[in-house]
Length: 363
Length: 248
Image 1 (tube, rainbow over the protein chains, first blue to last red):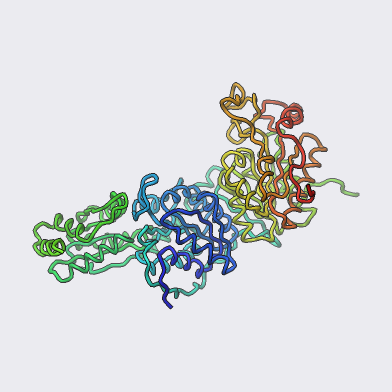
Image 2: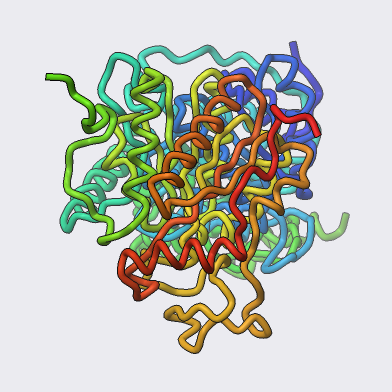
């Protein structure tokens, strides 16, 4: 059965379907549909919903429920996610599985409430203090939001690691038909570290403090080994028409939807636009980007930021082909004609692109 | 031969990291005594704060969880909601509970979380070399108030018990001290009452314990106990502030 839901509601329902029974949140636009939905659904399924006194309290309630062995989630938007960074560092440092949803809005500061992708650095480079990563998943539709939130709980449990869903105001607020058809995953590790009371067993401690010289370095090495494993096994992306493309667009989330439109419009013309849509932003699809750089003329990264993901693209390309960037900031959303105009700028001698631009602009 | 005094089983046999004359060891021992006597080791979960007592889990043989500075009430909430039938207590110092974590303690209290908070007030930040705490007395010299706390500049000591008692969500609040064997016995009774409050699902309980920090008070042990009795208790009067068993 398909339901017509906003991306925010799809995220909430997917969490319920995945067995999350502890949700802690704080109101902030543009993620309000999520917290509102949870306030109704959690009591229906016998779960806990708390509207916390702050984003900081909410992420620390998540820390508690994760430490107690439960599936748990919080959600917010950019300024609120900044407040959660301390907690996320502790979650990573204590290896606690949980899901955090960021429905990005324009920044810096209070910014605005429209769609943005300016939290990419914060999301994929750690965000808080210390050497750590959260797994970062980037949906580009309400359906994908549902699928990825469901998977996020499995990934979190599999690796004992926080998973961040990086959406934006458009992905969170658009309404699309959504189906919930994911099945519970088998063979997830038993939580033999969770706090339940030490009845009949040795006590357990959840902590990230290593005061004895050398122990913290050892623990960090363990984290890095885990992250390497995640990089090897969990990369996800969508590739469209990438073979023999004249130019390949790299974009995620809302930007990727617009880039898809560009790919579609170009199909009738005699020049080839391909596209890579990273679904995991961390781990970043490095390998495919590197391979691509050996066969394409150039890459154009499109973001709703001043240029953040483009740095990871360049790191993967290592100078093998030109990497261009087109971005809008402060709540601006790129249009397909802006992207085509950028392609014309990059490939000025390609008459086919010029024709497409004229056609698009004539409309 | 009859044993009349021994180390509680729940208290781990290890050397202490606390300074000479510190009160934390006494409080941790009292907690261990109660856990042993009531046979609740298997269902108790403790929260360790950031500060001198972060290593509380080095001493208590129970499931324990760290929390970021000031956040034990939020983390404890997350644990208690998952395990409502376990006994969950948060152990916090004055900087943790009454400065950086004021929002969390007030709202945990306001929600009436069925958790026991053990608030160790020694009027100073011990872990970081003795800076001013929210509970530092007027005139008290610390690393950051070398001329003594001047209330015109630095405000006044916060009376957490009285502050929280006005909230409808709180059930049992008492202030005790460690200044004498008699007061230590009263502290144990207060801790027992806190756990009873939780076991009977009566909601939020907090026990504030006035505790000596001879090192950063720059006093010897005797002077510290005298300081608690003569100076601290003038600002922080001992006694029950709120009690669900007393109708008033």
